[in-house]
Length: 202
Image (cartoon, rainbow, N blue to C red; front, top):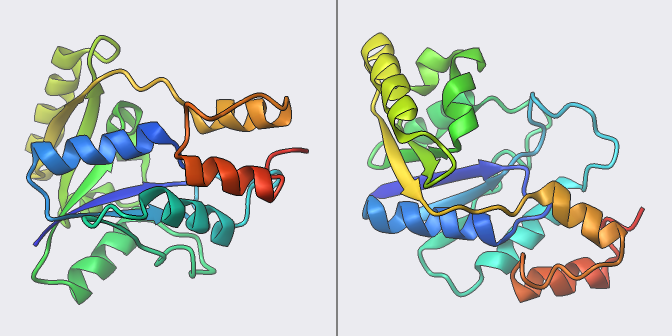
């Protein structure tokens, strides 16, 4: 089975996350996309203002409800240790040897991936899909970086062309704080959950 992995803080999950997963699903004919909220990511160790991982996971569950090919993966949510991508993907490869994994990242991550912990181990576990936003990211520059990395690590990194998706979780949190509408940026069930639980108010 071909499985896409959408990792992220998802604080909160929004429509651009869903759209990116849908593009990956269609473009690479995936069987499933697993949305994997970070529990304790190494790059976000300042916990101040962070929403509890279980709450973020619940918002993901609400956002993808009814989408049969999308599923919530809580592996990192339940880990107390810092979660490194290479460890997570090695774990998935061990318990799901029959699956081929596609790890979905943004353009920024493509250019910083060599600064991740053991990138050479991550890059042997999966195909990397690097999102290139049309009109925002330079296709040719991303292509050059992909060729460089594939040659250096014998990896399988591919471009995923997507439209511009300007929504950012930080902006949504700020609008919630300012009591502004977020209806156009998140699934309705997520909006209702945020309002009901007074998230991002302080």
